[in-house]
Image (cartoon, rainbow over all chains, first blue to last red; front, side):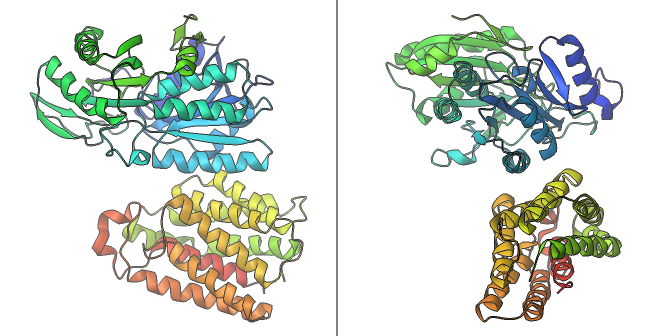
Length: 336
Length: 207
């Protein structure tokens, strides 16, 4: 049975957006008379490369939650787990272009790619230069060697953060894209889920996970993972996830990393810290130093129980950009 | 053989063709898809015709590209986006040519088909619109190569479209909702291929 704080299922996304705009009028506004075209309140920023993202709803803070100073300029918002339209992406593009071009950064999902590619093509016809970085770092979604098929999940946060900081410095479009690619190439993520989600307009779970079971590697829309099995202890689950993440990049002795412990919607922070305790122990044992840890909700899947671990391997450039300040409705960081 | 006036007449004809065939497309699409293709196509081409009829544009390629943009906005479904992509890619490929010859028409449809293949991540043989457009592009290249007159070019294209649609019936769907039915789609018309054939018939009926 569906138990949610909603009014009408079909109004879920738009009413969520009305709430966000009402809460953060100093930071966000919508354009083109469409609630689903969200941009920074001060867009366009003249002389700065603009960053746009987009994707389905149901993942807050993804995607629109990172629109703000030091990160993104605009976001096209789709229905729950659905791509926004190409027109919405185009409207956002036009509203944020400050004359130095626009970089699209979004996750590797078919519908999003079609619509953002269409938007890029239409923007080009209106003389706006657009470049694209498609994020995909979920190691469970495709094997090593087939990185291009991987789904984009929580690790896209790092791509937004580093590319956004680079754009804020006044870098040109090619430079900002290079940083997005660099961050994306150095981040890996893996998730685990204990319970399914209910899309409001569907009204029932789209899949089931049995009592006492977990699914390692499940995607943020419930895409199948690597294996399903009996729920293990936090330490055992983390060990299994880290055993997949570590050799994939690989992360090696002497590396500096940032770690993102991401709750999928219904997992308490207490459990995220229990899990991080083990991550820290593993990294210390491998001789890898941790520079900055983020623990909280960064990319969720409605009320899914579960979490993901993302790691960004740092070099001097990425480290410097990661430490820059940012202020968005869902993420604030003083310069470190 | 194709100027800005011809291009506008083509868009108007395509609008009429899709309106006349709306129910037929709905019926074919309901058998193996989700049944909305008739509405998608009639809406896309009606919008393109209405917005381009009085457009201040003297470049046929740009007119078709802008028509594609109008379609993308009016009909943002997968097939709507793909057909829109075809017009945008095709139009841009022949941009800057005020009066197209047969080779330009071939270039348009080659870029049209390639654009859909690239964006839809498909190729010939998967029971899609591409199974009509790809042989049409080849037939147009051959017709241009042998110096066919406009009537001959149009005949080559429409015959290739009909053959392509016929061949697609015996293929197995690999994309979209139809892919769920797989083998059950063999022997049935593919709604995308039929839409492609209608586009070709409408396009070349003005010559």
